[in-house]
Length: 482
Image 1 (cartoon, rainbow, N blue to C red):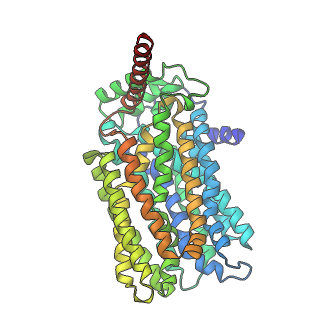
Image 2: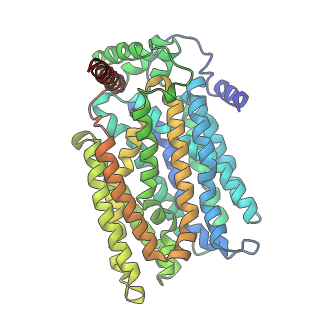
Image 3: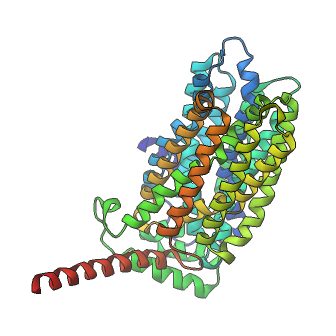
């Protein structure tokens, strides 16, 4: 894997060995942010397209259906993503963000085409696991890259582009399902996932390396030129001074376990788990299946998912405007409360059986999508991209990404089994509890980061830890003197 990334670095303009002089012109910020977030479209597309393809796959000879098989096909991508997220972060710290993005694009292309030619469930599941390496890598790397490129005053909105790209990819997947539903050509549905990856690789030459990574590796002049293209000269000088300050700290070989980083790691592990525990992904991955189980024809179910996908895209657009205005913590709390209510409504509708109103269920799901997309959807990626110290950011984000995909695997694999064992109503009640737990976690553990530079957030971690150590020392001294 190390050799492949080294080769990728050379293929992507040799970012690890190029001349250490500043670029004469920094790319336009819009270009940087678009291609930096493009991995999110790939992530979302692979999530959405399998939802509609699943029914057609199960009707194909050689692909017998069962709850376990369904869970493995859908959840296989999450299984691979566990390892992709963990490895991508470490490689990005060593070789740079850009060459690892190049490798991720290649895996998307090969993985999508391999899924499309699968001849049985085992083949398809294996291909989905391989594809998951890229999904996991992009989910951990894209938020870091966007957070490192964006100025503090707009970081929430710009880093949140990742979520907008994810839901846009999700909607594109749903639209592809509908366009091909007449033929039932699920192989073409899965193969089209390679197209955005080709665009990503083609645009890689326009994508600069992270300035924070450049400074960390002694390439300050290049970093200065890039920062000057995305913020004012005063902001660029201030950011460089702050980055230089935090890079003077000597890294510990096991710094992820250091006491001062522990609060960030608690958030970085808790938020991914609770994001999956909202129940949003059971709607995302299984919406057509849920609607069909409630008596709707497959084509109507696909139309309903497109409505949900459109609602999600529009909601994320609004949510991006709120992150830097209302703050991360407030949106987490409000989102948890709203999702608990909407999931309760979904559970009630499911409990009515034949008397259930499809319109009411669609409305409840739409409220769920709006609530998530205004709050947890964009905010969780923004927070994960900004809470970790620079020297361990890639590795820590890799751990957060790994946890994200372990939780996703548990939910996507577990939902069909839970639904068969408990029934749809009780399964949804389970996720109501998840939203209540998420509200309590954010109330007691999450600190506001709105408007602060990444370096200020890092220094806050150190200062809070130092104060706690001083308080402990004072208590110990008082105890010994008494």
